[in-house]
Image (cartoon, rainbow, N blue to C red; front, side):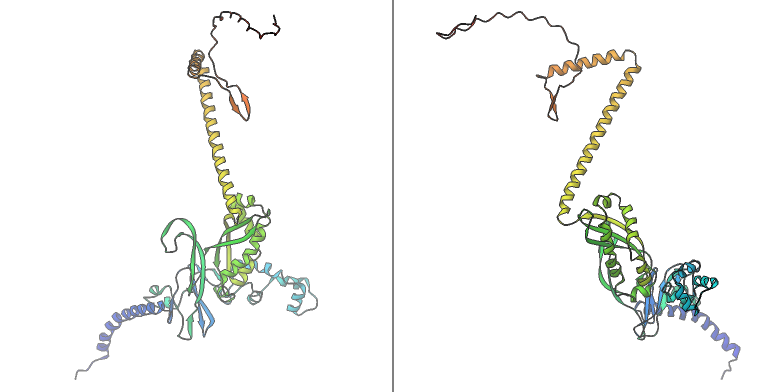
Length: 426
């Protein structure tokens, strides 16, 4: 029986370990990926998205993949928020400060304390939340710390042991505005694309443009209009968006519509239609619920754009007819101005040429005389030009009149025989 020394055993096992460990890790990465596709133990989080993890059907935590962004955590404040803390404390009254400090009278120094809030104070006032998304370095998951295969597992997040830990699923529908059709094919121009309600396991945390239609609005003069809005929204707190309200997008749009109708009622139709960019800026300032959306739903409405303002109902056809006629009138007026400018340029250019060239005046007069003679020869009669119901003689550059011999005097006609019995007049 052969005796195997420790060194020999180590030399035998070492190659197996060195070669086998990467193979095992690679095999683990493949298995983790397959499980993540089914949200078992792991889950795949696409860039710009977040997912909510439930533990026994209650919110436990959120996972995210968003470059240069991270969750705040339970003790963190950004530099901007630290600078804004004094402004946040101004809302506290003297009586609230007395109760907080447990004193009956405030000294000047104690009054200044209203400008210093702790993290817990701000959380209590609902100004911050640990699941707020803030700028910062990407959160590195535990899987990414595994040697050799950490980068391979980027985008894969740990969920937990099933069935206790699960990925939250909900129903969601929306209307996007993009250069695609519903089947995903590229279209000639951008247009609204309705998305059917479907099961979702993620929520977008990057900016996205949602298309919203506001109907039954009336302008100041009572014209019913249909407003198409583009809302650029970023979810800055997935916990609030998913669990503080049943459908966050429906809540935002339904609460925005009354403010839009109120704003439309203060403007005339031409004001709204004249400059949509100005209308968009003014409309956003008139929306009263933007702070509420941010604080309660975690939805940051960053841009409001008015895409179209169209009359609705019976006024729509009449307005389109008037718009078409106005467009045709504008085009005809533009053509008339263009023709007049061209004729004026031709005349000015001709006169300038005549003024510069010696003898050109005589040639120009002769030219006009020939044209006038041809015009008279080809015309049987000269008529008048009728414009606006008034007769205006047609002005032509005629040639100088040529003296014609006087016609011979006409012989007087003999008077007709008067009827019998009638007196003759000499």
